[in-house]
Amino acid sequence: MTRKKKNRNNRKNQSNSGKPVNNKPENKKLTAEETAASPEEAVSPEAEDAADVSGMPDAGKDNSEAAKDLPDKDTDTDPGVKDTDAADTDPDHKDIDISDPDLKNTDEANSDIEDVNDIDSDLEDMDDDDIFSDEDDTAGAGSDLSGDDRDTSPSDIDDEVLDLDEGQTFDDEDDVKPKKKRYRLNLNLILLIAILAVALFCVIRLWSWNRGVKIIFDPNEDTSQYDYEALDSILPLDEKLLAGHEDDGKTTIMFLGNTPLMAGGEGNRIADITVSTLKSKGKEAEAVNAPISFSTLACINDSYDASSYADDAAALPNLADSLVSGDFAIQEADLTENHGDSTTSLENLNALEATDMNSVDVLCIFYDANDYFYGRQLISNGDKDSVNSALIYSVKKIQQNYPWIRIILMTPYYSPGVDVEGNVYDPDTTSNNIEKMPLYIMKEIQTAADLSITVVDNYYGSINGSNYPDYLDKEFHLTDKGVEKLASRFVYALTYYDAAE
Figure 1 (cartoon, rainbow, N blue to C red):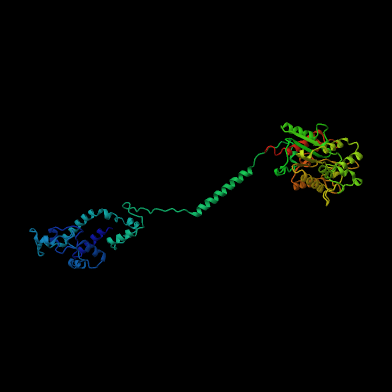
Figure 2: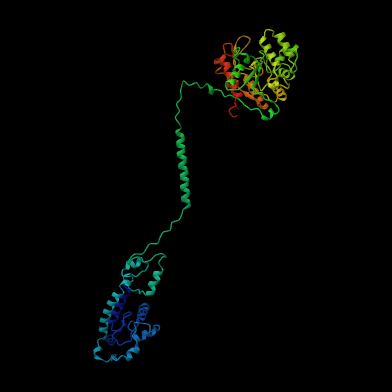
């Protein structure tokens, strides 16, 4: 129920009770006739609202007394109050006689006039009143107007409007604009999404990895080359060691060792193949091939004693002493007295004696497995009587006197052994009462590394326990194919750094 309808009902109830009621509508000027019909003094809209809000029980109170309780109002600025000065000077204005009999039914007239005025006022205030015309809509906007006995003043309505949430306004008659939602970033949600993304990535990668790559194997493929790994150590010569040495423009290679360097016959030995290969690459090369067939890397005696063991003269340490001193008397005596039939070894010794060491650029040391088969010591406290000490003594002797010479060590290749009874045995698993063959190989490789010289592993990288039938004959001597295999491995180490140059 609207405020004006409620006021009208109250006034009708008061009229029926026979008590005078102030029924002057808001902001409406009374005519002379209306004034005559209502002798009581006009009451302002503020007084009417105050009377309604106060909830006074005596609604029939004299209008003049009710007006006294209201605050003073400036009649000069209120358009709803007629100017009294103008009434005094208006010739058409007449004083109303309250004793006039025509004014007997004042209450009924006032009631009819109030009905008309209420209708006009409702039409004028329709826009404002429609906002509160429905109890349900009013309650949804935040005001409870469902009680019939509750009076609502404009100030109450204003307070209710102010109580609305900030940002809410009346968009239409019965609707309230909803409050805008503000969205915030949720750090926990972002972290969860990141973790899920990482987990998904890991799952995909793991699934892809588990799929693998399909590999097709050839059952007939020869994979023997992967059965062994060559333990080569190829090092260049320090450039500082070449200082003061005159290069003649030709690569001269000296070969020291035993039977492997003699295999293949004339023109097909390792030295011959090496020289021809270098020349094919446009390099001038020359070889001094000086192996002694029965020689070994290590000596039996640390000091040479011809009466004890004359063949120590051809061992590498004593041969290195002769290269430095130029005296090969002990080697010649041994060959002449003990190996008169070894003419090739004697010729090789003569070639070695005639060589100018200042012209030598590379020294190849290549002994077969005789140190293992003859039972030479692997290590000792002497300088010459073990494989380890003999190699150290010989290399240092050459390096100290001919520092510009690059030294390349070729290890023994695999070869089965034959005992005195003619039984073949595997040197990999059989000891010579000292050590097995693989330990001799490893000691040579380790010693070469300590001396900073190049080492070519023939035992595993050239002729090994699996492929030796392809390179050795029935008596376990090198075939031409075996010689070519060893020569190619030496050339590989010799020219390893040529491509870099």
